[in-house]
Amino acid sequence: MSLVQTWIARFKQLFEGSSFAKHVMVVSGSVFIGQALSVVVGPINSRLYTPGDYGTLAVFGAIFSLTGVVGTLQYEMALGTIEDDSEAFHVLVLCLLFTGVWVAGSVVVTVFAGAPFARWISKGDEQFGRFLWYLPLGIGFVCLYSALSRWAMRKRAFPKLSLTSVLSGVIASSCTVGLGFLHAGLMGLVVGSLAANVYQTGTLSHLAFSDYRTQRQGFSFEKLKAAAKRHYRYPLYTTWSVLLNSLSVYIPVFLLAKGFGSVCTGQFSLSQRLLFLPTMLISGAITPVFYSRAKQAQQEGKLTSLTLRLINSISGVNAFFPVFLALFGELIFVMVFGAKWRRAGQYSAALAPWVFFSFLVYPLEALPLILERQRTSFLFQIAQFILRAGSLMVGIAFHNDLLAMWLFGGTSALYMLVYFVWLFKLVDGPIPKVLGKLGKDLGLSLVCFGGCRLILWWSHGNLILTACFLVPILVFFSIRGVRQILQGKQEAIAAEAQPEPLS
Image (tube, rainbow, N blue to C red; front, side):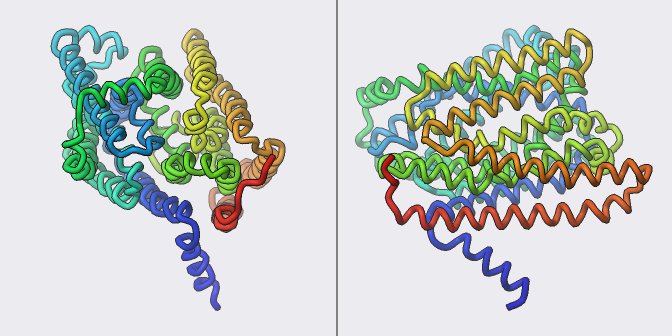
């Protein structure tokens, strides 16, 4: 058997065996295509749009994400744990009702307080005020997608979710590139985002409407009130926990916009997006499948093994990427995106530690909900928000954006490490073993890429000589990551056939 045939056979193995692995591969395929589109289109858009355009869009995106958290009061998170379809449908209706309230409220703010709000949220950014009409539309679409996508996960409609994700990415990319060549400015980014949102919500709404036909006869306001009361923990605890978590993620956007302007915000936005590529590819694919299976695994006594094989599959896959960008980020950003994005490359070195530990945390964030540890999780979110906001405000006080980035990246990495240890303890996972493996992967990455960086310095910037060493190392780590995922998948098949061992 040839080498190509061997790798094809190994790839086919990913779709055999456990349903968990199948669903992961279905979702990861769509995430991979979506990220591949962003990689292809990114260098084009970075030359068609300015950092200021991306900075203004990032502020809008941060507002949408934060209001999307509060808009449904996190009731959609209950859809993955409710066994009765009628009760789940009433929870979905609750989410849609709250979405309508928030959209109406945003219209009022836009009409009657638009100008003061625009001046308050941005530092002399005139574009933000001109595009304030985008606010109610974006809030509505974010809230709708949050509820409808959770309903699709409940129905395990992962192929539909995957196809929707891919096609919405194609639509957004087509609009932004086409309008960018027409010199549309920020309008091109806004229209691309809106077009993708319309397609996503429109497609997923068909799935909910089909269930509406079977559930509408049993619908009643009494059941609606009962569902709201039964799942009160989500608005009471989860909403504020997730809101604080989102604030911690998006606080750089708001503080950088007010402290340094939209150009600095745009540089940060591009750097963050590129750094999180492997996280979005792997964690973004695994998280919805893990969430849909975790509750069942807990009931069957298999939650520990499910979590452990998830971590074993991904713990070292992302180690090389943040190290690579930390050492070569400035050079890569200038070569790929253009000289005006040099600052984004400098930011990548400061943010790399945060990304490194975030990769482990994101797939496990559903554990406090499943194990009903929302209160402790909420305290963690408070600590995270204080650390991140404080670090950025120190940088703003010294009028130094690089200092702000280094402090933000360091405190975020420290928090993510502590939070991961707590999450893993919830399922009695072997923390020393996982951290030891992670340390070995990190050390190997530092040695390999650090050596390449020394070669670049020793050769006085000779890119050809450096590439002769760097390209084989990148290929090595890529193959190593695929083999690790394959090994984790084989362990998943064996673990699903066995009961959880008694502690």
